Length: 187
Image 1 (cartoon, rainbow, N blue to C red):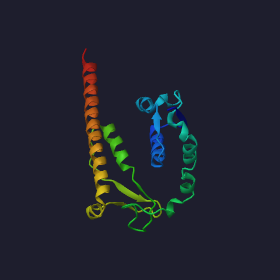
Image 2 (tube, rainbow, N blue to C red):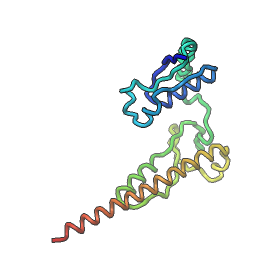
Image 3 (cartoon, rainbow, N blue to C red):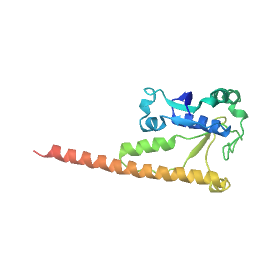
Image 4 (tube, rainbow, N blue to C red):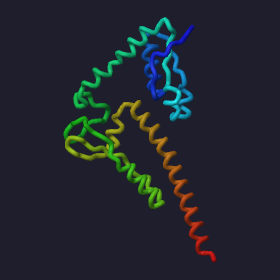
């Protein structure tokens, strides 16, 4: 069974999404060079990207499916016309144009700069339409679906390990600086 390349993608994730599309239509598909690019993404251009391959007899049908991805129809829909997700609406005006605040990123940068762990913060949300800023209350968080709460707890657990790494690194940098200062004072 000879395989034919029907698409090349810079990222393996894009190739996997297209592979899922083909497999859902009953077309067997294979992603080549996925692990090379996952290991060293800079090789993506050198090896010609991640290749999506299908058996030769499915080539025409696969190319037709891949050319009609539906992305153009989604691009024509305004973001304001999309339904709001769970908890994605401003409590003041009801707009779905909300975004997370970047204060968490700023606080992390500040904690690395002053060599003190400042990791006690909560996510704030900002409305793009009226500018209202708020924090989700415990009652609002408990009213979210269990799948959303589970996903958020996984993200928080991952962020906790990053906080620990940042704390250890900042302590290591402080120890190196102290050693350097002490050696400068010796004759």
